[in-house]
Amino acid sequence: MKKFLALILALVMSLSLVACGGSKAEEKPAEQPAQEQPAEAEGADFSVAMITDYGDITDQSFNQTTYEACKAYCDANGVDFNYYKPAGDSTAERVAMVEKAVDEGYTVIVMPGFAFAETITEVADAYPDVTFVALDVSEGDLGDYTLPGNVYCAVYQEELCGYMAGYAAVKLGYTHLGFLGGMAVPAVVRFGYGYVQGVDAAATELGVDATVEYAYGNQFFGDPDITAYADNWYQTLGVEVVFACGGGICTSVGEAAAKVDGAKVIGVDVDQSGNLDAAYGEGITLTSAMKGLAPTVQHMLSEIAAGNWDNYGGKVETLGLVSGDDPEVNYVQIPMDTTLFGDGFTQDDYKALVKDMFDGKITVSDDITAEPAVSSITVNYLGNVK
Image 1 (cartoon, one colour):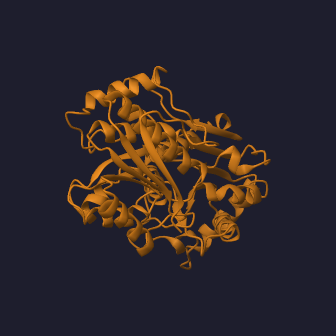
Image 2 (cartoon, one colour):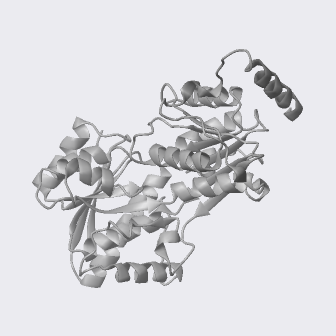
């Protein structure tokens, strides 16, 4: 296969002397010029494609972060990069984009989100010479399918950063909280159940009563219905801060929070303070429950370039805390720079919390088969908004 590709490459290069042609440039944004390969990347024999799930690269969350991480690595290392957006939300349309990327010569394909589980089962065996890196695709998502050696999946301990966010919110003085998730898929549920456990722990320590309104939007984007639901929480029920745990659903929660003086939002997956504060008012983002999407992508691309794929192929790896001393190197965290720390919960308090979690003094259940046990708070489980 490699010899065949080499012959094709030689033919294309020779034809380029007498004619203009394009292959992979078709899907690239116009502002993304061809990169001259730096000396340290000479000899690199892989190229990278990213497929979006049902969102796009401006979703302020999973797709955007993955796209930016791929692009940053590839630009810095002279690696050819492109992204593809499926025409709709179906496995068939995601498979079609994988096939298009392979047809256009991409050898490493990055896929963010649990929705790619079925895609993997359809394409991984069909393209054994292609390397697939999937984010948030778990063994449960894959069912009985056994990963072949050309696929690596990373999943995260969302319950840990969910706990951090809920704990911080109560320590900072908020006692009526909300959790508005996207769809009730395992990663979102782990975020939510960790959040509830963190709220309960902080309320117990402070000796206060707290309430959590808990619901799912049943989608990963905001719309007028979600905004109206969040309006009711903030304006009628008196909710003070809502963990918007559903990608683009943060747009509706942010819009609702902006109408109420002092209302706050907790972001998800990445530090969403920049986007939320710019759109809905400075300081509207209390914190964000983050997982290391960008570090995972850049680490895996570096390992592929270094020829270390055998250490990862065929594995589903769970990523969480790797340091009790430096929270910023962990794969799950809240942001040190933009969290609205205060007297009730300082940066030093956060570091101590992470240290205790790393050392096992604080444990957070990842069980999503039952609602977490609580001792000091009331949780109103409200099901799906729509």
